[in-house]
Length: 138
Image 1 (cartoon, rainbow, N blue to C red):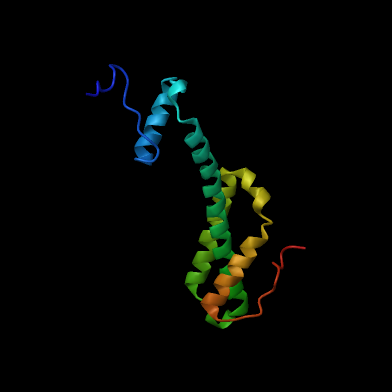
Image 2 (cartoon, rainbow, N blue to C red):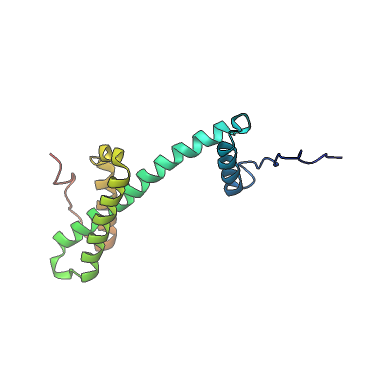
């Protein structure tokens, strides 16, 4: 028979069972200074994932922004107010990401964004012949 949790101690949630409950418990353990009970391996993974998530968000916004700028330039006859709204929204989103996470500025030259943007623009316009490299890069 299990004796259950000892008074003043809470049962440990596992990372695999419920990540939200696990995260809440890890935060509680940190605040209480119970460092010996922390799941260090998974905490480190989650911290890495936060950075990767920020990078993915910036990359997604840049691909959408660049694709819409390509559509704007190469299909002027089809310009739509929604394209302009998307361009403004993505520019603002990129600015906010960079303001909140300045270390992402190092990723601004990522060539994959251009590749993702041209793929998206081809899918949305059926045009081909977009520049191989971003014109803003030298």
